[in-house]
Amino acid sequence: MNEKKTLRIINSKLKFNAFQMIHLLLTLLILIPADTTESEILLHQLFDDYHEYTLQINPLASTERDEGPENAAAILPETGLDAVNRRYHDTIQFLARTEAIDRDELSEENRLNYDIFRLQLENSKLAYEVNDHLLPLNGWWDYHATFADLGNRVPLNNSKDYENYLSRLVAFPQYNSGYIERMRKGVETGFVRPKIVFEDYLASIEAHIVETAEESRLFAPFLDFPAAVPESDRDRLKTEAKEIIMQTVVPEFDRLVRFLGEEYIPSAAEKEGICFVAGGVEYCQYLVEMHTTMQILPEEVHLVGLDEVARIRDEMMEIVQERGFENDFDGFIEYLRTDPRFYAESAEELMKETAYVLKKMDGKLPELFKTLPRLPYGIMEVPDYLAPRTATAYYSRGAADGTRAGFYAVNTYDLTSRPLFEVVALSLHEAVPGHHLQIALQQELEGLPRFRTAGGFTAYTEGWALYSERLGLEVGMYDDPYSNFGRLSYEMWRALRLVVDTGIHAKGWSREEAVEFMAANSALSLHNIRSEVNRYIFWPGQALAYKMGEIKIRELREMAEIALGDYFDLREFHDVILLSGSVPLSVLEDNIKMYVDQVLIEKTL
Image 1 (cartoon, rainbow, N blue to C red):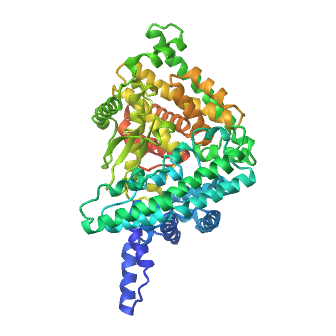
Image 2: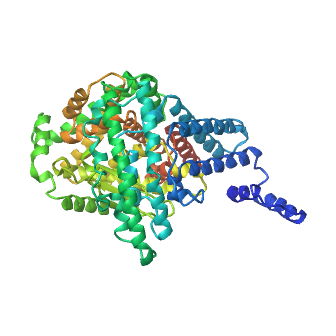
Image 3: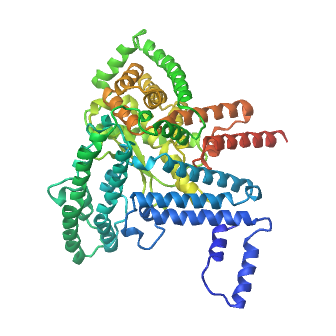
């Protein structure tokens, strides 16, 4: 059934005459199969309503998808407490509509859609109730950094696009005020981030307090206009941009710096763990369950992490001994950290090595996958203003309509902390067969409700990317012991997260305890370790998803291999993992079990 077309007809606001009404009824009889239930029609109406609602409350997403309200391209989301409160009550109403639908009347596919949709709504509702909205900064593409990159996130093809862009710059004060209002409420209630993570944080904002508009990243689109912008408009747009940036935007960056420096940071928590702030224990449990999609306690995650650290350490020691260092793990790590052969001499060299690895992997993808995305990807350097305090790399998804490629951003700051033996594992994680392959495929899936092609679950998304690092073993990507040690080091990194994150937020570890534990068990540079530990302090729970998700995917693969024996096909297994999009781990397990049962039935008939 073409539900979208059906619902457009049902929702049409046209006034029908008798002939048109008869035609409509006949059309519906053709479009809606006899076994379609009222509950299924209501469910898809709910999905469409929610999709339209999300576009209304998030005009930035509306612009990215080229959908939604007509004026969306010229406005920013409402960010203050009243807006967050309204969205909470809207979520409750959407939940009530969901629960009013008889799940038993739905098809198997729609029961799955129903369950995932309901889980996402319940997570949104609970997030508000545990005060997640009072902590809008997590150190990872925070709102001011995302706004500073606006020129790379919106269409700028003609004069109208530029005028919309300027309108959003004008709206920045209200956008900024909403976030400040939420953080100020956090200060009042004692629900705040720890002071320790703000040591070098203000620099990421101060970089946008410029002396001239031309120095601002937000002015970059006015340096090189597309041909569709007439010459007669260019001087006017440039003049307006300079005035808005210097008189409206820059003062807001300065206001944010002053608010953080004078109000927030002096009131920030003295201890690192979220468990020490008011309501922090409940918030920590929410984050663990939300990010892992599992009902599991932080203490249980901690034990899983310790077991994984021990297993991976044994594998690393095999390489240490093979390279002639006997049992001197620390000596081998020191060798890796200090020998110049393992480090690029320039940003260009690091980018070239990354490009070579990815091009090599591109040619091996058909050995592992039946279905590949159409959307291409590129590589870029992490922007200078973010590089000193952000991660080693990250992926930015492309546009669902194919108009913008996905991008793998490589951090070229402090090259002595970017060892070349880690490039393979890192690139496979962030680009292919990791984030780009999975996310681009999800964006291209047909027949799924839109909330499933645009959203997702961290445990699945990051679990897949970590699993992808290991896939390189199966196609010869780790062609020397050092790159394989780099892979193990990255796997250890994710296992250490289970221990360190829960150690900090559930057991009260200090930052130094966390740094020492990671340094003793990995080849990561001390710069990276300190940055990562700050990330776990700043953003509790998110880092747990990687290893917990990867462990589940490996468990499911082993189960399928044992059950199917010679009938196991890795490429088909990967299709089952990928072609339902990002799902909770329990759903992924059900999908694999159904796949195994189906293959066994087909092969034994």
